[in-house]
Length: 229
Image 1 (cartoon, helix red, strand yellow):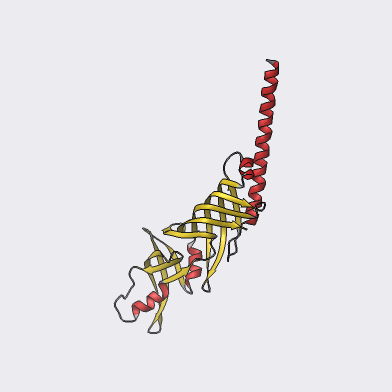
Image 2: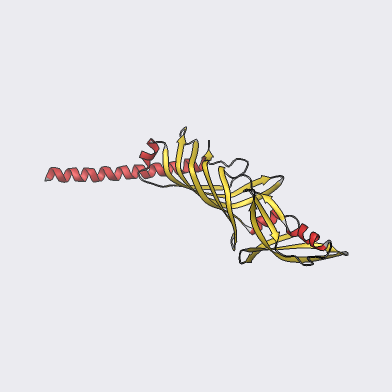
């Protein structure tokens, strides 16, 4: 019995050491991956990486991680000469392949959400245009037009949609003066616009877009998504 107790104590201690080493290795790997995350054609602010699953060391031995959660803040993108900042993006990566000592990180599949704030959307819209949440899944766009020498500010409720899988389209449902020759065109020139979203990690694509009080919420999915390497 004494030998059995000693063996059990030894097993418990050994298990504790293994868990401690495993968790320390996870922490180190998370920091390493976060430092190496790159987004093609864009600059990024901060990156946070969380590696799921236990034990971690056996996953590394097989050069594949079950799941990795990535949070990226401040993605500065540019397309067709227009910049559009993604405030934050959260992504769940599955079956993550590792190559060259974490220098290459590719996920077999990924799902996530990107958020564009109304402040950033306003900056991308153009001069003298302001955008805010308009409730009921719409956005409120306010722009100024000059008519007969007078500058008039007008606000419209607009629908936001995705076109071509990578372009955000803002289109007013109805504008003041609709049907009056020239006036509707002048208003829409201020309130309606399209902006392409570039700079997403290779392999990710935009699926749906939904205006919320916090900003435009865009769902993303992808296969063979490369974050590094």
